[in-house]
Image 1 (cartoon, rainbow, N blue to C red):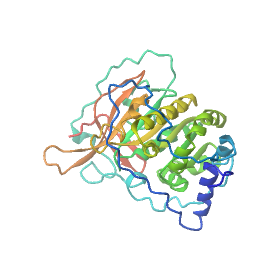
Image 2 (image 1 turned 120 degrees about the vertical axis):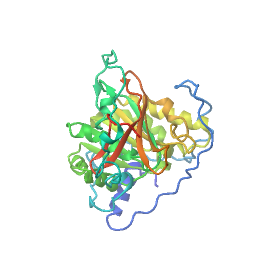
Image 3 (image 1 turned 90 degrees about the vertical axis):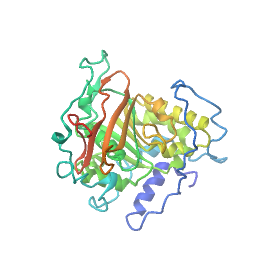
Image 4 (image 1 turned 30 degrees about the vertical axis):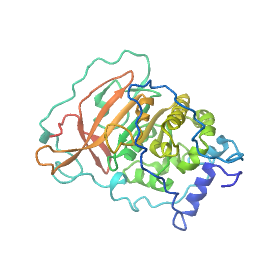
Length: 364
């Protein structure tokens, strides 16, 4: 990439080229964890080690000459750039980007039969947390009922889960709730193309294509290596960019790929800590997604991000203890600062209309 280029211009150029030919595969990323975990007793805001020892080599020249604000302005949906064509119904027939969820033994097409789980309910303090902070809904049926009074505005959250648990859908639905109420939002993806994100949301009935066209939604697809190399510029310019755009919510999918760009747990924690601080300074309510650890489904891949965020949602698979022939999806709220919430584990499903949490149902 030349000195005159920046992330967003390169991302847009890739989107335009993909209209006529297949996209060039991104450089593969080693997804193997380094086997270390953050000390669970460490201070959440502690900064360890020297952040420069193992950081990616950016070379002698600056990555780009234009400021980050100009780059952001050229992104589709941010007031500039070209909007690529896409077919909203092409290639989204399973996983996190479509499908009708479970349809066998779960009470019909795409959903749980709550009556088959023995009723139940949410057991948590009915008294709202005493605070003058404005609160918002996440926008996921059933989950919002598990959070009394809503999540405080400007909260930094993370959804942790293994492949297929609906992390991307979780983020898309979170933004759609704000967009459908006339607000603005930013979606940054390190894994999928701009077209696929927009098409996935549109197929679920969320008009992301219209939001982008009306400059109410900025969808930016970035290479994680380029983002890691330019993280210093992003940290300094992101708060002003988001304020200028007028966004109230932001999603980064996924923070795990960004973490993998750094060698050494101390460097990784320093870089992610500084990045999360810039997100808080941006003044938006933010949802990150993160891969779960292979050894512990309740922990993120590197065991860092859950200590740097204000709220943690764990999405996971649960198998029946009787015959192990039935697998269901379950959600748990690990923490939300300044909010009362249920601590029960509840089943959920991913349907053609998004995620639904069955608050009144039990798992088995």
